[in-house]
Length: 444
Ligand SMILES: *[C@@H]1O[C@H](CO)[C@@H](O)[C@H](O)[C@H]1NC(C)=O
Ligand SMILES: *[C@@H]1O[C@H](CO)[C@@H](O)[C@H](O)[C@H]1NC(C)=O
Ligand SMILES: *[C@@H]1O[C@H](CO)[C@@H](O)[C@H](O)[C@H]1NC(C)=O
Ligand SMILES: *[C@@H]1O[C@H](CO)[C@@H](O)[C@H](O)[C@H]1NC(C)=O
Image 1 (cartoon, rainbow, N blue to C red):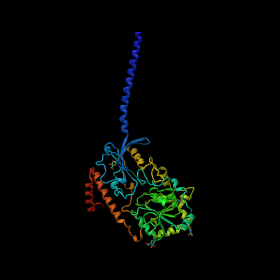
Image 2 (image 1 turned 90 degrees about the horizontal axis):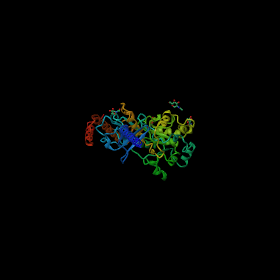
Image 3 (image 1 turned 90 degrees about the vertical axis):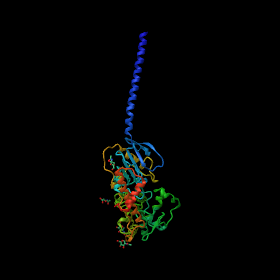
Image 4 (image 1 turned 120 degrees about the vertical axis):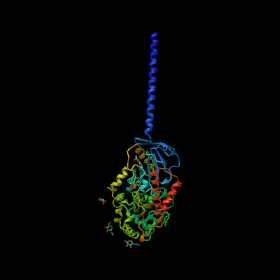
């Protein structure tokens, strides 16, 4: 009896010891594990973003996970600081910069709102960029082309004969213009005004307006770049003016893709390297190949009156065997990690912001030095370039744009000086130094 009880006590004792050992081991292991996990998650901090609310969340990017926030108080913990180009202000950068901080710049727009961006003095402080340039770390060159099949599908294609018939029956011009931003660095309105002296142009936007859009399209066309109704409405035209609001390498917007989608020949001016991105060897008429608007108009008359000459521009529609012959374009479209919806919106999971966060998240784990961003990441000819006007005239606002970009040059140089010294500065200090530099003409 006694020995039985002893044995029982003995078993209980051993079990308790076992349980304690396991508990201690468990606690030890989890304690040890948790800081390791915490250290592996890098923090990304949006310094300037597009949001009006605070957020703080985990971003899962393949094998990597990062904490992404826009809470400025976490500057100390952050591994990478993210900037959204259009919302940057000269006096709102986190200074002094820690040697640990990677800077990332997301800027998909032309320099019209932030004139200091195209300068090396500014760009070289960023470790990674995502811009329209093919040389950036996450190139957005085709961001305005919703889907490759939109280039080749025939839903909106109107035959040459049909276009002729519309033109005759509805008194349409052969050229359509649809723009509401009338003061551009590229002198868009000035050029179209000259073109109108030589060929009829139907202008539906507020710039050089001479014809009204159907009512159902009037509110639609700015928000819905590629609506079915709009593409259908445009398709009877033979040519469409496609002049970007600014000239930068690889800066290409819906102005180029939309006519291509609708089976209309774009009359293009903008990215100097645009020919690298067209679907076939000859998919658009390029303004920079003509000395002036009158020579362009003569060419339009000729192509617009000759079916085989006209259709030669529409290989992406009519060459069913090989509609997209440009290997660079095909490759880019296959590799790009984003896609805009037809509505012009990016879906949430495809949003440029998420893609950019994931780029930075992956790079945050890298420890090697790399070359900083340079001019090729955001390459706009300076001073601004514009479409060729008769008698070498300048566009009406050319001087304003030039002086704005001149201020941008000064701002970039001053930012460079402050950032290299790595000292905090106030807006007042910045402005005082800036006007001093401008007055003394020190920014050349
Ligand atoms: C397009 O141009 C490239 C380079 O200039 C040339 O190699 C190719 O044969 C051309 N393709 C066609 C279909 O003309
Ligand atoms: C039409 O254009 C083609 C070239 O695409 C040319 O060979 C032909 O002579 C032109 N026809 C007329 C009537 O100009
Ligand atoms: C990031 O860029 C800064 C400024 O150009 C540079 O000093 C720093 O070494 C870069 N960091 C890495 C990891 O390349
Ligand atoms: C346009 O360019 C052509 C060809 O260089 C020239 O003959 C013509 O005189 C120019 N027209 C105007 C209005 O400048």
